Image (cartoon, rainbow, N blue to C red; front, side, top):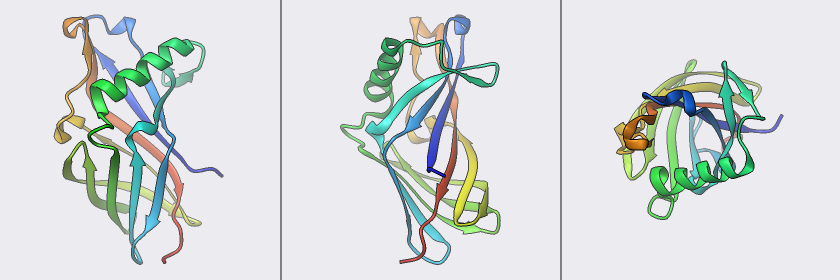
Length: 165
């Protein structure tokens, strides 16, 4: 099974019905074991790509055109992640029972982050939701704030964790 990391964003505002909840795919990341229960995940910030819209809780691949996806990618880089200044996103953590505890280094700030996971057969699966503003990333908005992204993202992952060493 291929490794997968996806980021979900959620719309709000007076004109939210004109916007879309989105799923972005993380294209370049590495999971490295750094101890018996410790690991590090490194993501290239410029590798996030809009995969599509979410409608009624399910992916809807027909809603957004290639141009829409390209525009979302451009806004994500230019207005949100700034990969020219912050090229890497890192999570360093430890597996503690059925939970991961660690620190997320995002947008030049390091903050604690903990969340439940399932660890079986060398794979870690789970989801974590957090507010990007804790890392200094204001929610993206357009049309004078009438259409904006909520100050929360959900990251869903299913990745293999290599053996120690």
